Image (cartoon, rainbow, N blue to C red; front, side):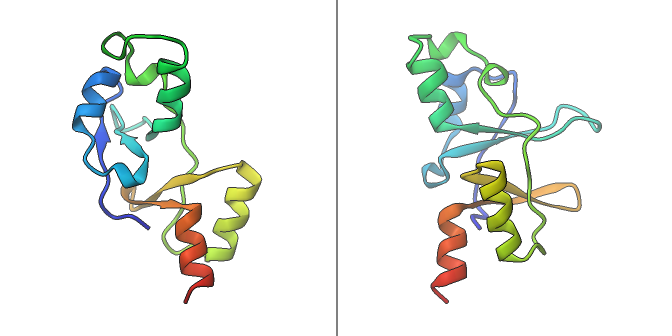
Length: 120
């Protein structure tokens, strides 16, 4: 699990979001909830490539909410790694936020699961 991650507001433009990004190894950013009843989102670099660059759209004119995944499938930090891997397989996920006590505490990826699960 990556404990260092970037956050962005859904109303930010893609240009602003990319300028805020510091942890490129995660290949994504957490989209913060806008209010208590809202859900977290995920902004993936692959989605920016497909939905912005691939469609010849200007990053300064596209908002994060137009590209992000929301609601996002998330993982509890106590989840057994085998079940987490099965969840990723069933939902066709590459990465997901880890949420504890209603707060994002990290981001887990398939690579994290392999390294933690098989390379102990």
